[in-house]
Length: 112
Length: 114
Image 1 (cartoon, helix red, strand yellow):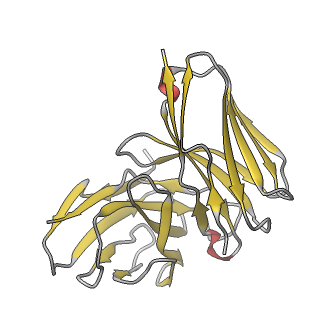
Image 2 (cartoon, rainbow over the protein chains, first blue to last red; image 1 turned 90 degrees about the vertical axis):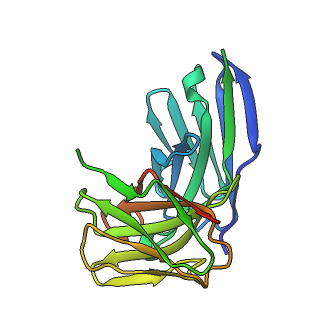
């Protein structure tokens, strides 16, 4: 059974510092990995989708890497801003039905 | 505007009642999903549907039921058999049930049992 872990559960950084968020998974036979952002009481916003054949994806200040063999993905957020404060969730997808297995999330606070 | 809508935003249920949560999408997506989120935890899959008139159980389907009579709609019923229904419920959709497709989420419904 696939298990997805995100450590740390919470992170606080001063504005301007780069953020590094970690995601690990136990079964390397994944088809994709998706990073989401969730604001308190809100739904999920998709940030990046990495296909299993890809090593990384970039969007603006966000960069996500994927190492299937070691079961890890890292989300980098450059030059953090207070507006980046949110919970970040990673999820891995498998073939049948594109079902996602989620990690518990990392709650990020960027201090002005 | 294309997107996923969920209603109501907040729902209160008495013990023994069945309640139905609405999920509608106008993205023309084939696949739809229901997830449950408990405080401080990630999401867990309840049910999913890859095509109209077909759906499959996810990891925690007990006490829940769904229907998929229209492509754009995937309502979730929380029955009295669900022992601990208080949670945040999220609906999602994607172009299909194939692995490469990104999932998009609605704003969620918060269900509280009184």
